[in-house]
Amino acid sequence: MQAVLLAAGEGTRMRPLTASLPKPMLPVADRPLVAHTADAAVEAGVDELVVVVGYEADAVREYFDSEYRGVPVEYAVQGEQLGTAHAVQCAREYLDGPFAVLNGDDLYDEGSLADLLAAGRDGPVIGTCRVEDPTSYGVVELSDGVVTGVVEKPSDPSTDLVNVGAYVFPAAARDWLDVPLSDRGEHEITDVLARVIEDRSVRTVTVDRWLGCGRPWELLAANEWKLGELDRRVDGEVHPGADLRGDVVVEAGATVDAGVVVEGPALVRSGADLGPNAYVRGATLLAEDTHVGNAVEVKNSVVMRDTNVPHHAYVGDSVLGTGVNLGAGTKVANLRHDGADISFTVRGERVSTGRRKFGVVAGPGVKTGINTSIDPGVRLSPGATSAPGERIDRDR
Image (tube, rainbow, N blue to C red; front, side, top):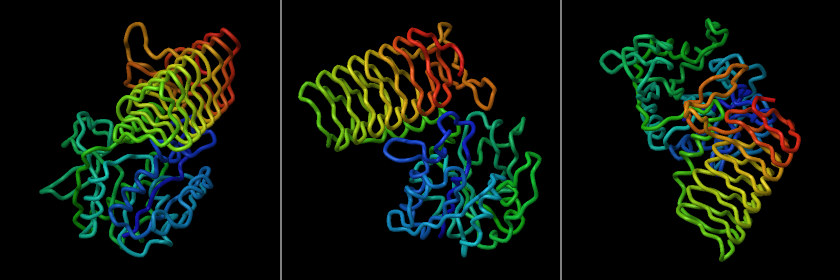
C-alpha cells in the first residue's frame, strides 16, 4: 500500500514560525512533525511514501530524500494550495493501488495508525477519534457500523466520533479526486470520501490518541506528547556537577556544564550547550546548536536551532524560532494575574489558546535588548527587536 503524506501547506496559522519553514518540518522532539507520521506508516508496512510538497518544498525533500528507512519516496508538487483533494490529485500519477492519505501536520499514536492501515487492506477506512465536544470538528455519521457521511461542525452531533484526516481509499478513488470547489473555496478530501461511500462500505478505525498541530500552542502540546515518550539516554558531555533528573536525553555532541539541573522529559540535541548554572524543566526541547547560558531558566518550551538564551533570562511555555537571541535579563511572562486563558493572534484575530500558561512565540531572527520583559501571548515577527529595558505588551 502507498501512503500519501500531505505536506504542501504554508501553515499561516503557525506564523511566525513558518516564515521560512513549512509547518510539517517544525521540530517535535527528535524529528520534524511530518516524520512521526511517516515513521508510523513505515512501521505499519507501507510500500511507498508519496509526499505532496509546495511551500518551502526543498526542506521536505532534503529530509526524506529518495528513500526513507528503506521505503522509496516520490514527490508530488502542489503549486497552489487549493485543498486536500487537490493535493492528493497532484499525486495521482504515482498511485497504482489502494492508498492511504495522512495529514503531515497531525500526530497519531503509532499503534492506531498501524491498525488503520491494516484494516484498509480489506476496504476503505476513515480514522476517527472520540472527543468531548465534537461541534468544532467533522463528525462521522454511522449506520450499522458503516460510514454514511461526515457533517462539518454540527450544532447537534449524532456521535462523538470525529474525522482525524486519515483515510485508506480503494484504487478506484484515483479517478474520483477531481471534486468541485466547496463552499470554502477548496477541493475537499471529504467530498472524495462521499464518492467512495456511494460505491463502497466504509468502516472506521478509532485512534487512541490524535493531535492536529496547526497553531503554536499545539506545537507545544505535540512536544509534550513526544518528549514524554523518551527514555533516558546520555551520549553527550555532562559535567559531574550537573544534575539530570528523570527522562533526559543528551545527544552526542551536546554539552551540559556545571551547576545545571535538567528535569525531564527534556531533549538536548547535538551541538547544544547548556549552562553553567541553568535550570531546564517541564517538557522542553533544546534543538541543535542552541545555547542556554548562566542563570537561565527554561520551562516547558521549544527552543529551535541556532537560538541563544545566554544570561539571567526566564523563558516559560514559549516557542523560540530559529536564530533568536535574547539579551541578558530577558523575562517572558506566561501567566495572567486573573488566571484566565492566554490569547494569541492567529490570522489577525486574537483567539484563546485554552492554556492558562503561555508565553511568547518568537519568529526567526528575533533579538531582544537586555532586561526586556515580554507579556503573555505576544507574537514577535521574524527579525523583530526590542530596546534595552523595554516592555513588549503587544505583537510586533
